[in-house]
Length: 349
Image (cartoon, rainbow, N blue to C red; front, top):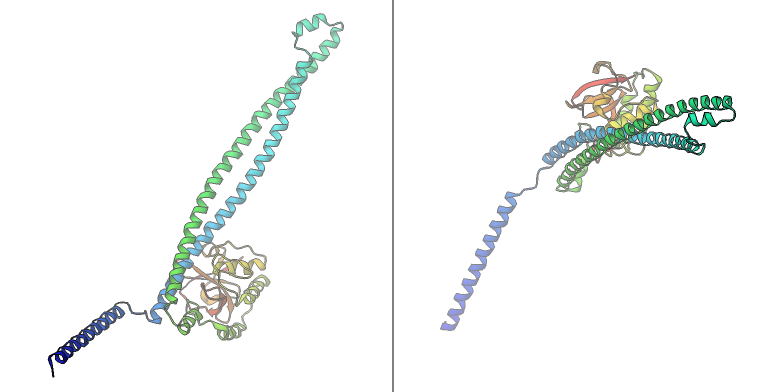
């Protein structure tokens, strides 16, 4: 082998060795990266997603409470504005009448009454006119007092309206904070779901996040189980259950009260509203909207509350089943009454 060939062989060997080393280093780096950032297991994703949805649901109920207050404040503010406008119109009418009276007095002359009496051709006529003017003057004084009172009333209403406007602005700011918090949690949950395969994601979303299996087959089975011998205690409760049954399959949308979508307390409010009973908006206020019943004495139509913060509610449908709006991504469905941590149950009046 000549020198040129030997030199070429050595260069080729060095190049091959370098490529082997680069490939090994790359493989090590990639292996280390994959080991440092593994995909979370589906069970871990499901647990985290369920936790985020539960936290979001708690915030949704807080949002619903603030929104209910903001709506009441806005209606009260509108009423105060209308009242202020009516009182201002009456005040302006009183002012105009007072101004007309003063103008008429001026046009009738401003001579001293003694001089007018002395110059009068008919003193008796003058005295009668003077008595009339005195009565008119008394009415003018009363009108002046009325104008002052109306001024104070208008200012009081306007001051109350200003206070309500401050309340409304604070409530709207709180609504935005709650909305942002809800969306942040739901965005994080969606990000976790995106790490799963389509099949795994469907399995997670197929469950209701509260222990119920969900799905059309599960709803059919639960609907059959709910047709037991237990009857609703009255026609209103029966109507509420019927409404909830008709809502099965409707999507969960936080803040929604129907008829196309619901959150958990929105469903129970709408169901009992269809029966002619006005329930408050949130889970924790609905829990005080009737008489408490033990879990062993549940009857169709009763409201069943779960978790320590009363953050979730369903309506008892009989046969050991509730109907509830579970969480974002799920639909209104049946679930076993004991599938969540039971806290209390209420029978609306």
